[in-house]
Length: 484
Ligand SMILES: Cc1cc2nc3c(=O)[nH]c(=O)nc-3n(C[C@H](O)[C@H](O)[C@H](O)COP(=O)(O)OP(=O)(O)OC[C@H]3O[C@@H](n4cnc5c(N)ncnc54)[C@H](O)[C@@H]3O)c2cc1C
Image 1 (cartoon, rainbow, N blue to C red):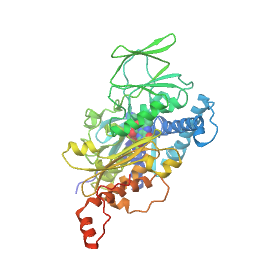
Image 2 (cartoon, rainbow, N blue to C red; image 1 turned 120 degrees about the vertical axis):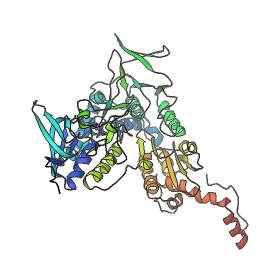
Image 3 (cartoon, helix red, strand yellow; image 1 turned 90 degrees about the vertical axis):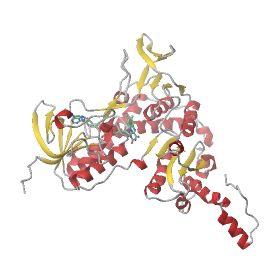
Image 4 (spheres, helix red, strand yellow; image 1 turned 90 degrees about the horizontal axis):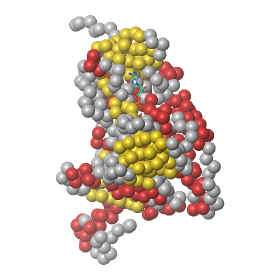
């Protein structure tokens, strides 16, 4: 037997965002000698420029919205006094708290990870050069690598550089008129947050609607909610130019229309962060969207994995984490675990939220299959009624046997509610089993059960029930009866 080559590490993870933190932590816990190389700060986009600051800002904006609308609950409404500087201080203090609690080097070191603050580039498939801030470089070798270098905003080319998620949360003064370029989750969340905090927001998108990857009817419910708060939308238009004028900025659209604003946020998609990594030296292939991986998150080099946004797949924190678990399970445990692309779930954290799981009705029909659709409007959900949150709907797609194929929920707490369907779907449960599960009353999650109850209502048309009615002599069976 040949001698096994000696490497400095068993696993080196490059990039310490959501993907890298999970990959490094898990590898170390499984007994691999692990290093985590990060060139900027641990936590990555999610903690510093993504999920955490955006959700904190949305919460503050919701409080402001509730103050303005308190009369709905029998209280006196009053306009919130907003100090943007203090709001942003709050946002920054929350992300610092998240960083200290779960991302900072001491936390990772406790898990057994060696944190190296440096940039990395490949020298060959088993070696990288790391460059510290001081300019010092050294070569380290590893048996396995996980590339988790994330993504950055796609930058439209204008004479003025628009804001992106990298600069938005560093603002110290509030834009009065904010132009949001892009109608995806980032653009839509920030449009609502800034509008509620007192900016006047216009969203321009080249698509025909917002949130094109979500259920169209549900996206429309959300658009209506945002429009009722004052957000303006311009569809099927591209911003061609953004220029500075003495009074602010002027955006010119492809039809010649102009929009005056004092800030513009580009939320027009992401691109993988790969420059400087010298992937060619390692023989790692880059595709159109990002680093190419197979279903085990393995790149074109067997010992090198890639996870998270750098692969251009889905671009969510929870998917980045899932990918890292898959990669480390394959690399360290040698257990052939695969990406679970059937149960992808995501949520846009506006008010109301919009969450999606698995296949949509359109997806199922496109592949030529039959499906059943079960819906429940939030206006039939007692908890939503008591809380004045009746804008929304649960929609569940099943095959004819009741096997769950997907779901979309728009409404308050949709992001929490969708997880029950995700658990059910992943474990092969049928919709009847959600209906048979006792849910506390009155909760939003009870909406899941009420939606599922319709499975039984629909059986009223089944020949079996007709047979039972005949056998037992019942006379009340009504075809087409509905609880809604
Ligand atoms: C505004 C906004 C809101 C979002 N909200 C949500 C949300 O609510 N829920 C959700 O699931 N997702 C959300 N996302 C998406 C989520 O933030 C990303 O999917 C997630 O952060 C990706 O993690 P990652 O580890 O792949 O990349 P990143 O977080 O980008 O981490 C990559 C790390 O690699 C480092 N790095 C890069 N190159 C090198 C190198 N050569 N050497 C060393 N280090 C390097 C970088 O400095 C960085 O720290 C949001 C994104 C944005 C922009």
